[in-house]
Image (tube, rainbow, N blue to C red; front, side, top):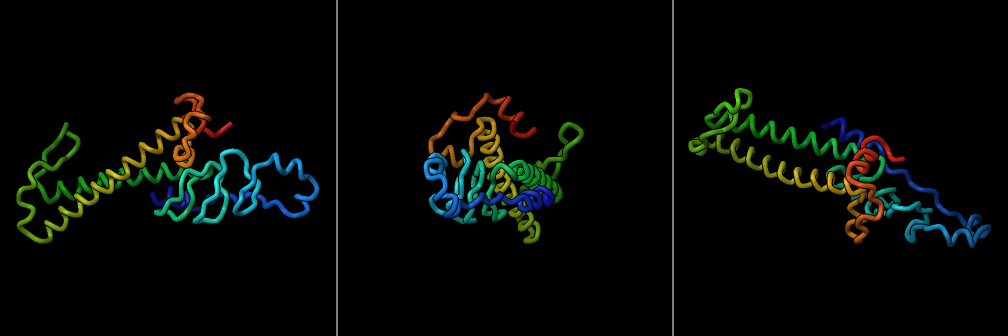
Length: 188
């Protein structure tokens, strides 16, 4: 999980070139054909949006992550999804480990211990705190599951959250399988 977060933060979204005054005076007709950011005057390729928090334009900007304090876009979305998967695995594992330690566990399928009877966890304050912490961890995991499936749905439709909010549904979709293939193996 730490590596995914590291890569998501170490692949910042590149700032796009600023259109300077000399470029404006040389090709005014060509300049009007280009889309440029009204806030930072960057030349924007298609599917590029400005982040008010970061102050830069981000290609295929999905959202600004408050957890990572960086924009999620084309350069780090794979790492963000990897961090979500690692978050889910660690939350489920730690909750299961805590609950099977303080509750009476039962063996499921000969491989997995699951908590069976947690009726006596509130007899001791320390065990009660562990139980409540495990339940809170499961709540965080529920939020992570929602975010993971939201990202998976957006990727399978070749859409960003920004485009979904603006109602641009299905403009760039090439079919679910091809969209997922292009996302995980690089865009062509």
